[in-house]
Amino acid sequence: MTVNRKPLSLPTSLPRTSEAARSESTAPSRGVARPGKGGTDGFDSGKVMGRPANFVDRPTGQRPDPSAPVLPATAFAFGGNKVAVGSREAATPVTLTASATPNAAVKDLQTLTSTVSFDKDVPLESLKLNLDLAHSYRGDLVVKLTSPSGKTATVTDRQGGSADDVKGAFDLSTAFKGESAKGTWTLSVEDKARADTGTLKSWGLEASGKTQGPVDPKPRPSGPPVVAVFDGGVDFKHSDLSTGMWTNPNEVAGDGKDNDGNGVVDDIHGYNVGFNSGDVMKGEGTDHGTHVAGIIAADDNGKGNTGIAAGKAKVMSIGGLYDGADLLTNFERGVDYIVNMKQNHGVNVRALNASFGDEYRDAASQARWKAAVQKLADADILLVAATANGNGSNLNDVADMPANIDLPNVITVASMDKRNDKLARFSSHGDKVVELAAVGEDVLSTVPGGDWEKMSGTSMATPTVAGAAALMFAANPDLTAAQVRDLLVKTVEVDPDLKGKVSTSGKLDIAAAVKAAKETVTTPPTSVAGR
Image (cartoon, rainbow, N blue to C red; front, top):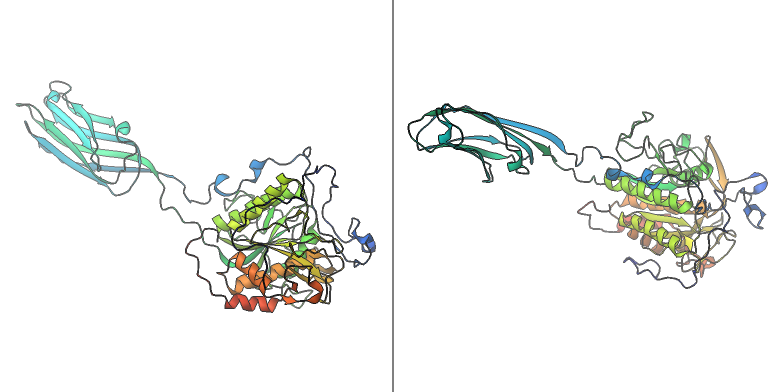
């Protein structure tokens, strides 16, 4: 089977002539869809013939509004640019001391030397020489200090007079700034004349600087695969999600501190992009987000539903997607968070579920969407995106974001009906932009408050594919996002109803995809860059 969309090599960006810029100010502001009384979703989708009573439209979030107050971008800086991450690369002040007590005679027309050593490699910021040198005529003496590298500074050069000892503290910081303290330091005392005697009683060095210590390498992501659910927040207290939620091991719940230094306080189960907090359940769409999460990872406990990747993967909640700012801005914030958590904190984020989207015709917004998804690609994170619920509309020539972004880490999903034998009537399609379909009608899953409900929409089909991807990553952790995407494409079950509607003419085959993942031989990565 040949699929031309999203090749393994990153494509050159080509503008689509049909995607002319338009003003976004006239677009209606819509947040998150949820089932309403009488079989509606809270907007107008329930009025369309053929849609099931539990249909839930794909959330579009807020449209950009220049007049809307939003948190400053500086509030959303993560990792090292926000605060120090643990002790990594933190400079530690160090003071070293070394001394000698030679009690050696300083003889006429001779040079006396004495040494001290340091065993730590500390770049010097300050250096003080403490010296006790008795001599009957100081004007006879030249005193010098030489560093391990051979650099020399003169302490005194035949200055002074009769019975004038060389004694006290001498600041040599300027002469040796930046030199390494490590090694042997040599003090030399040369008597340039006759008839006067002296004694080098004692001397010592006080060296101060900052050491970087061993710079810790970035942690390699470990643990079960994590799927980041970008949506309304996930009800992590639900009994069927108790073991399926990702929990931040380096954060202390409720202490009001940013324990792991990632820039977010108390991000125990994820991050709220709309309110810049760890409270993922604040804001709109928690029923939608919780339902999506349950499809991926609800526990296999005999209650409600069992997630596709139950016991094999974890869900990280990126909530608040429909609050605080427009959808695109919140998406960018969420991407920055999960990439930071993977690359700098070792969280094994392998996939992002995007059961949302909208059309963005202006070139500037399209460029921002693509740049954010490219960040995911660079971090080896798969984007599993829902196509629209357009009642059979073809999205081949629509700038549907983020689903129609043409990058090798993106897979786009349409919805099959509940019998899995034809495309659902509410689902959009597009054989150039949608790869495959999965069941998205009458899907039972978790909702806030410890309950379960059936919902329908491409929003439900998408986490089915994300859960399958998580199973593949669990079966073969060395697979890349692009490899998993390609295996999902190659292992579909061809369905005549999907010919000309999705690029593979097929629907998700979980067993075949996982089998292919297990059988794929990969070369384990030798570095943690992007993995």
